[in-house]
Image 1 (cartoon, rainbow, N blue to C red):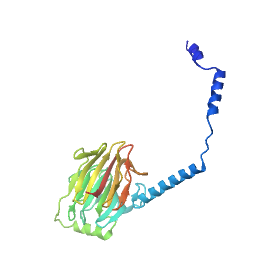
Image 2: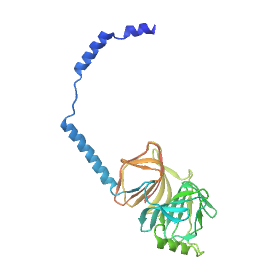
Image 3: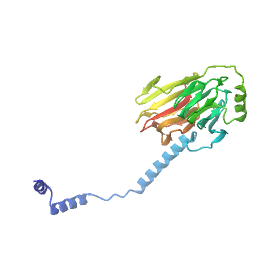
Image 4: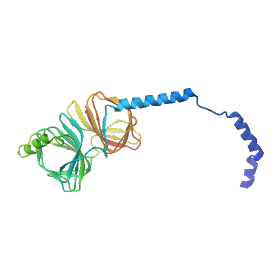
Length: 275
């Protein structure tokens, strides 16, 4: 029965040949004009020039790029950016490694990117945030399983400043209180569909946040009215045509522009910028 229906409703070879002939007669070959080639080329060059101009002011340090420096046995760090109030670095701990007691020269923020850290009774896990005011004294910092952390406002990378912190740590007095924000569901605010923000710290001028973007979320382009630092904690985002991945770092100076931001897989970011 199926064969009968196919024969009944399918054109025979002569009908198909005639149909093909009629279709081919109406299809005219298309040759792109020289003007079309020039127009496409001009648009591509303009897009490339715009991308280069927008990204020229941005400092991007890829997770697999940069130069690691040994701090002590089992601990190394990678400089990201040098600021007037401390440096930004990635610091990596081998299992069992520890840093000595020290006193902070500047406000120091840290995010655990991988593994665990402990300071006395305080236990920090992946994506936990910890901030210490200037003058505060840190207990010895260690890791049981090994860890990777982002620090900003640190003396690492400046030998004389690091020495001052270690010597200052020998004095028992404490100034200021450190604060910890754990990786949990508390404090998140939805800014617009698929984009959530969690405030970590603010002084009215600068603020630090976690941003969580669901898959498909977008953010409009914006001008930076203050210096901005960004660390990709997980996932991926496109800033214009620039792709940032896990543990990539970017510094955007005051006056620079971020193009539209988009993620097709979702992302978690730490950002410090305008309050």
